[in-house]
Every structure is written in structure tokens, then in C-alpha cells.
Length: 79
Image (cartoon, rainbow, N blue to C red; front, top):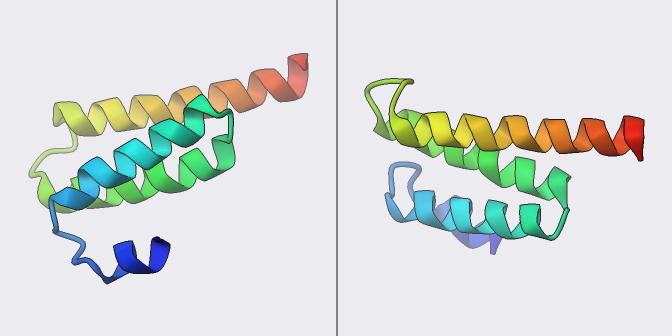
């Protein structure tokens, strides 16, 4: 799957939905490391497509990334 996605052009708008779906699935499965990988791929695509870092979808993705780090922190320090 990764190889197929990498072959798509980074400006392909379908990548945004695919990366978001995969990242969300990993997040729901508590696989935060994999989720981060796909949210970071998502943010790369979004930044290439958007004119503003303040675009609502980019803000939403950064919030999701922040939530993952919060979850990882809570798991590490609280258990």
C-alpha cells in the first residue's frame, strides 16, 4: 500500500482522504506511532495544496498530531 501511495503525485487530492483515513484508523487502534506517520504525510500534502497554514484542514491535522503526542505522554507518565 505504501509503495502505491508513494507513486501517486504529492498533489493528488485523493491522497489527503486516504492518509487521513489511515491515520484515523491507527489512532483508534491506539497505534500512535503509525498514526503520526500518516498524519505527517497528510500535513505534507495539505501544505502543498493550500495557500495558508491557517486553512481549517491544516489546523485540524495539527490538532490531531498534538492529540497523539498528548496520548503518548499520558501513557508514558501515567500508564
